[in-house]
Image (cartoon, rainbow, N blue to C red; front, side):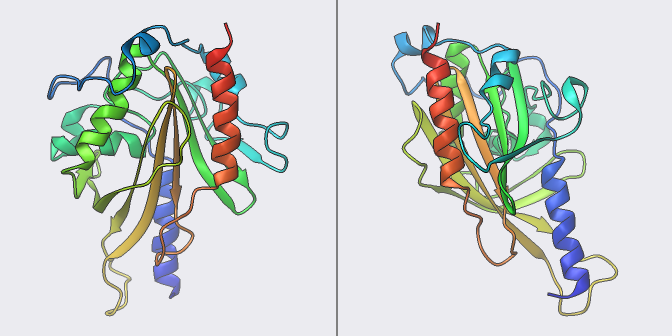
Length: 252
């Protein structure tokens, strides 16, 4: 890979790491929420974790020896805590891909009651981890709407920079949580003025897994360390974080 291509790849990594969804206060238009996939009584009675409980539920070295967890930004005023907002459908074109676009950032079209965002994993193999609490009914809608969107969404542009994504494809999600969706896609970077003649569009693979634990959604997002292959989100991270969230959901 040339120095220019490497620079473009690193730019893609930076773009994904600092991506923050647009603000909103409630489910933002579009089709009526899909019927929840799980048992309605279970969803209605699910425990809603507070902001403090979410922060305490982030996986640590006790749960996964050797894990490294870092805030993205500084505290509740930065990107580290409490900054996931309801994403606006109008920020994504076509709007039918809005649930997919929001999920890449760990968000949805519904207003959360609390959120935490971290980088987590072992050295050199980390994912962006987002934990979001919702009202019980909303948490089920997030997963069902994402699953529906993945049936037709193949590509989209999002945000003020009209960042492009292509080759959206649903994948198998790990058997964790009460409901789950996984997908992959490519972040598209057009060549800049310094690119060599044979250096065209750069497609950077991204993987996303969304797991619902009661009324809490855990989203794992990872960009590939190579433009040629999809990233593999660490299974030990998913297993450890899932155990913590399952325990938190059961505690009263």
